[in-house]
Length: 321
Image: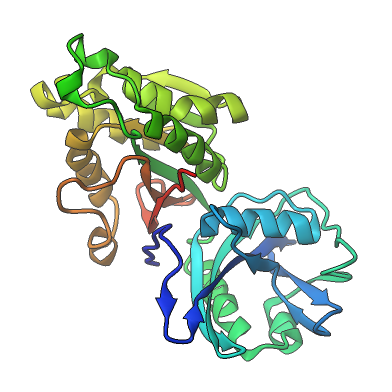
């Protein structure tokens, strides 16, 4: 499984601006069998997946989560990326991003407008019900991931801190250099982006600009925050093995986690992640300085059954509107 997607501006084409959309394939295990949620849209009289258009200032992961909640009342956490569909609507190109989303105890509740019926069905039944032939592509990806035992995962997210005040204008201790005004807006956007994966824990460098970057998310979601000296620029340069060890320990608890650190530390972080993924996935990790833009994130999905195996990689930049 491999994916690399960036939360960039919607591209312009000769046929007009691309329509960007996103959605989910909600799935569950019933008596050991895979089931998926299909929706009926009365406007189109078709069976499809929960999805919708990206709002201004929104990334595709945020859109997928929002649309799923609005259409069927499910609060989802994104799993592995499944497919990116490209086709035309009224002579305009459209791109739809799909993710897997595991459902455990929640009950789907259609909004009654865009969606009037929902059904939990087997993948075979879904294939027969789906009205648009292209909708089978994310279904096939979901089935393949289930067979390969990489559908059940937890997210590990690496965030570069948001834009800080320039070093040249800061005369006090480097660890106290805070975010610039732009960085504070980015931190709010980072919080919105992280909520698509809802990490339970946040591990961060204790330096001010990292703490300020992840504080909006920590407060919004009441996530557990741990400050780790080994992730500061100073400590990572002097003792890189300690920084690598801090990243290695992220895998120990096998629970969703976000890590926030500095640009010079990112190569050490990515070297640890690369050791737990296949060659094709390694090629998706940022490899050149500055690795990530301020406020940008790499999202890895780690196999629940094999905690030493990363099965997908994505990259998104939060919108700092």
